Length: 135
Image (cartoon, rainbow, N blue to C red; front, side, top):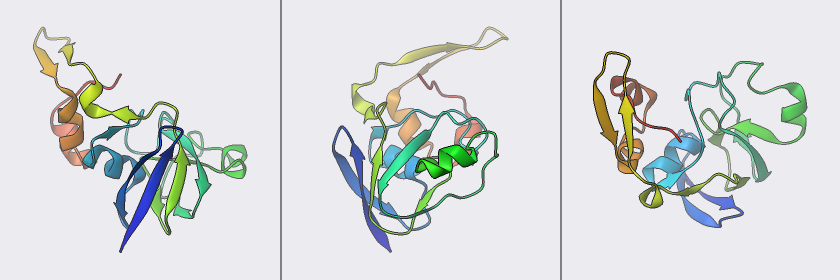
């Protein structure tokens, strides 16, 4: 079943599948949201659910505290929809508006990471296969 999600304050709207995380849906539809680990461990993707219901998914308690949960916060990399959603994410933007980034690895290799590389990495397994830039 597909739901509708709106990201405020930007007003971006797109469909989200029932078993899809908020972050994966945003990337799939060409929108960037701040993230890092994609596994519920770091808290970089933390944001507020303003309207609707989510399943918060699996995460570390240090990334999302009881106080965070009481304030309506979730981790966008873990949370899946149970209804239409309105979420707050001040760092959201269009992937196409992001500049390319050159990554330099410890062994000297370099890779240019284009913003659409992030959208193509919809699952954590795909993201782990090849490093991409996350501003």
